[in-house]
Length: 101
Image 1 (cartoon, rainbow, N blue to C red):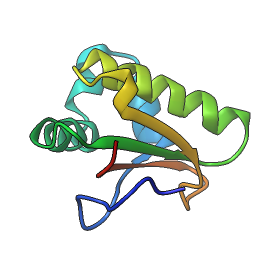
Image 2: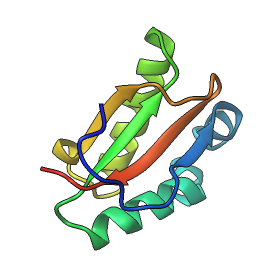
Image 3: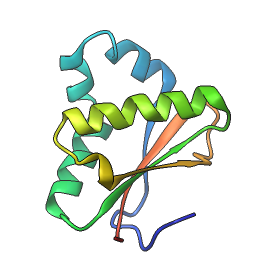
Image 4: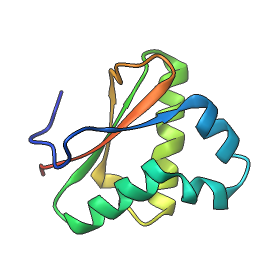
């Protein structure tokens, strides 16, 4: 379910291999372009939320939860992060800044 209109032309995608390589170091996670861009866009739109769409199943949900925790560590309120199934890719998360309460 999309909460409202999107604020970006397309979602950013985070592949599982990219995440696994960066997750070994907190510094590397903070340098991932999709996370940096998502956080920057969310900070420019204080009323917006971040939709983290994940591949189905428990593994996809667990991965999305990890990324949510990192977004919080990078300064985004957990209340602004929404986890949704349906990234559209079996090996990637889709991150999108969206309008909405």
